[in-house]
Length: 84
Image 1 (cartoon, rainbow, N blue to C red):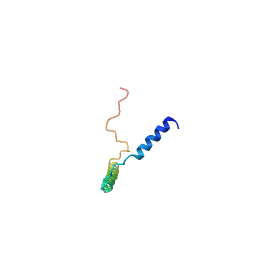
Image 2 (cartoon, rainbow, N blue to C red; image 1 turned 90 degrees about the vertical axis):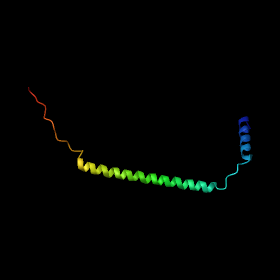
Image 3 (cartoon, one colour; image 1 turned 120 degrees about the horizontal axis):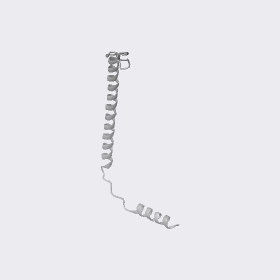
Image 4 (cartoon, rainbow, N blue to C red; image 1 turned 90 degrees about the horizontal axis):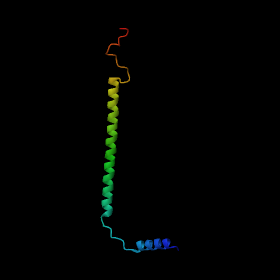
């Protein structure tokens, strides 16, 4: 074994042989509650996003049907005078 490989193996052995910390008894319950809360928030945010998007599309459709932005507006000024 080379020096680096031996050192890596020694560090790995030390990490695996060391005492592991105690895990709180209610950790699974807390993680489950937190995960459920995050899912509810994401679901609510997604619903709000889609609702706002649909409302924006409807508002744009109503505005476009009333304003006709694709048509040429009538000229409100007189044409320029030529040959003075």
